[in-house]
Image (cartoon, rainbow, N blue to C red):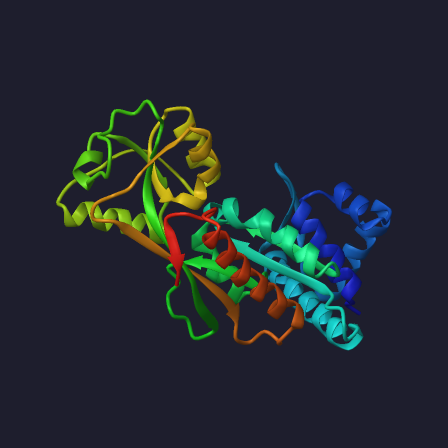
Length: 307
């Protein structure tokens, strides 16, 4: 008979892609962990894991179970939270997914603020490419997403949070005109841009197409964790919001230029309509909104405005 402990074991193995590391994190002996997975596979009648070049990997059936098991475990956690929490203390786990460009600005302040206001909440930050945010939320793998230019989806509740201006980010040694730049100024500049499918990339492509110009694409990357170092090393320039590189801008290792006409993107705070209402999710959602307002009011988060 399949049980929740087996689901928990299986999810941890898939996340770590290593049986030994999973056993250590779960504080169980590896033979016992392997036995539980064997029992799970026997009960379900399918193979769930295989050993590959990158460690233990889920089969097609295993990937399906991983997504469903995450949803089940999260729902069970919400039930325990609702039944056992004290009136003056909100407790439980909440996962928030955001693109790396947003995470640069918001992740650490959010962790600090949630810890200060709700010490019993276990917060998880999931930093993933923006194209994957909607699917992660729909599959129940996260509770909240901060999604750029989120389209209307019937299964999601979406509330605009902030509108960010897109800036040209370049090495200080790049030969660019002072002041605001036009799309024409960028035609000879080597660019490293977000990899499609990406809403920000679509805006950039449309701006060049509308001007009947082409850009010089040097490389593509799915996260700003690759884009920003490429600028610092004077490999290429990019177009991203201020939040993606604000520390480097202040340090002088990256120079930011505004565009004329300007380009913008909107970040929305999204939750699943089908997920059970949880006080922990409501609390973290409110913290995100309040924190965003504070960061903008204090001019920590620049070149943006509340939506």
